[in-house]
Length: 98
Image (cartoon, rainbow, N blue to C red; front, top):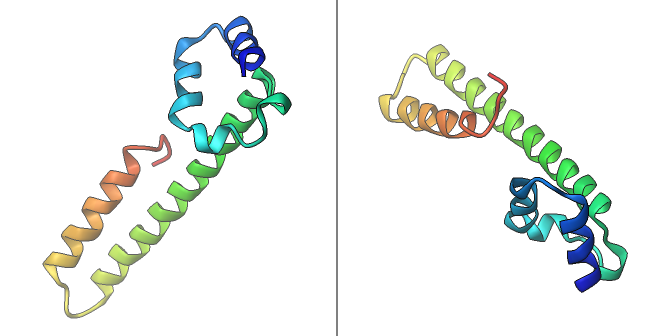
């Protein structure tokens, strides 16, 4: 663990990236410490962020489809429109793709 910590602090000058390692630790530290390096952690972080972005885009697409289907339905329910719109807004806050 000490070797990994030394490698991280030597090779990752950006403190915010280091903070992300620990924020998403269960998704970044995916191997025994002796098999991890700063490069591997960066790769794991990139893969995690890519996966999360794809998940958010899927959520956004599903919510958009639900909202569009509400308009098609003759029985437009205000509660459902508000619920889906709030979920869509929440998902959009975490993605740069609109």
